[in-house]
Amino acid sequence: MPNDGELVRQVLNGSRDVYAELVRRYERPVFAAAASVVRNWHDVQDISQEAFLSAYQRLGTLKDPQAFGAWIVRIARTQALKTLRKTQRQAAWDRVPEDPDETQDSRVEERTEEILSVVMQLPEALLQVVLLRYFQDLSVTDIAEATNQPIGTVTSQLCRARQAIRIRMNEGRS
Image (tube, rainbow, N blue to C red; front, top):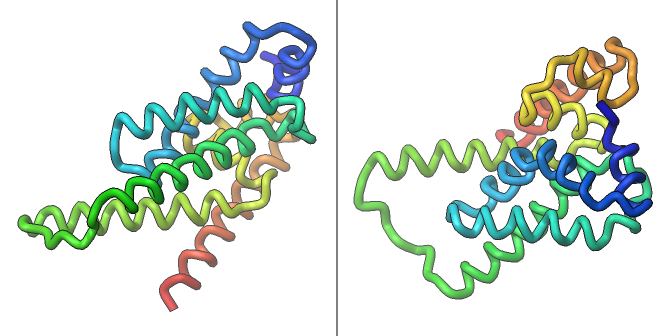
């Protein structure tokens, strides 16, 4: 299985059909990044499509083809934030919940958003392995193969990423 860098180079060399494989690999992380910001299912779908289209159009500007995953997720998050700002300008968000369960759901959503926000701030190498492990459900062995890194490197990157997430989450509570 070719890694992201090889696929990006193939697309840039004219094999446009190869882009479908990149979309397949990253549709879930892109969707998750958009959903962490925007709660509307239709908006999330639109944002995901726009992110992949935008990435395709700007693929030649990607400095490190191997970092495609982290790059496309950042594009999706940026577009989701733009959509959210536009939506917030159009609607009043100062509604009081009528249902106590709605408050609990809102807390869970806030916590999920907080975690995803911290994850998205990780350095690219750590972000890439976290996305592959927890959003693509790849094993450490598969991640090592996909990124052309030793298993020990991937394991230590995941460990450092979890530690960084834990530290940043604790900082937010103090």
